[in-house]
Image 1 (cartoon, one colour):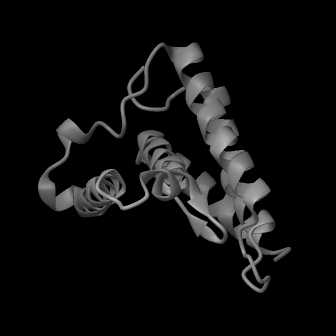
Image 2: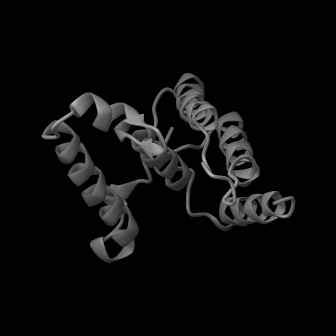
Length: 144
């Protein structure tokens, strides 16, 4: 399997993308409630496991085929991730930095977000997938 090519894992990822705007309420005092963040973390892990079980492996985006000019967003995310991990390791309270506290998200939540980003770009850059992705986001933001 090259990237996220299995049909079931792609549909699960598309479903998660469609549900995200519905569970996020920007007008609430805590826009992302802890239980919703935990469900997001578990859903991303479940999609990754589903992709591995169906296809045997997951490679994030075929990055070796892209030039540096084509992967500016991926590089920015990678640099941010490395900085976040280093700041968590050298934090005064690494446990709080990892788990998060109150309305602040820790490294665990950001790892799930970065994994979600990696799964999304690994699904491919083909026009059919991008069209389905855009349609899912547009349809799911109508109720909000």
